[in-house]
Image (tube, one colour):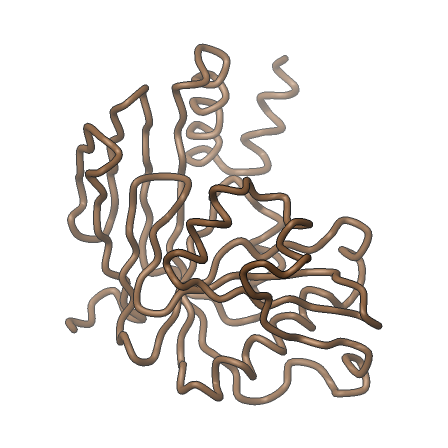
Length: 232
């Protein structure tokens, strides 16, 4: 047990390791208790290819629409996928030689988080999106699926005048951070959400800093900027 605890703190550091330990303790107590620790990130949309064209020649990037058969293959719950389409989220899929290997979602202007009661508002509205749920099917995680999908997403977004994409990173997901580091991520804020049955509390480094939600209809709005000190 002590070795396991030391391993957690070695992997995450003291502060994040403590948050992780609290969340695991909460889950042991009740399924109605959770702690989510996020970092809010922004990265530029690259106008130049991330990899030479010869490496992505067999890769096709295209939109996946509501009702397409690929939607059924995504591991998210059906109601969550429905909610994403209802808020006009766009899903980009990566296909290698016709096989569905990866996908990602993004929203223009704002995104209603499905894990906690938070709505992210991006700025500048006409030049930014919020991306989420980038998923690579397990058998393709050692391939060029990740960089190929981002390469196509950058092209898709740049053609629409988008300069930035925001996202929220779960601080316990070390692998995701490592995968994105070379894309130019920058942290613009942090937040911790604590859920206890119908109550949810947010503590954050960005406005409104502290929020108490007593019901599902009461969502906190967090405005994200490329520079956290920039006023919109």
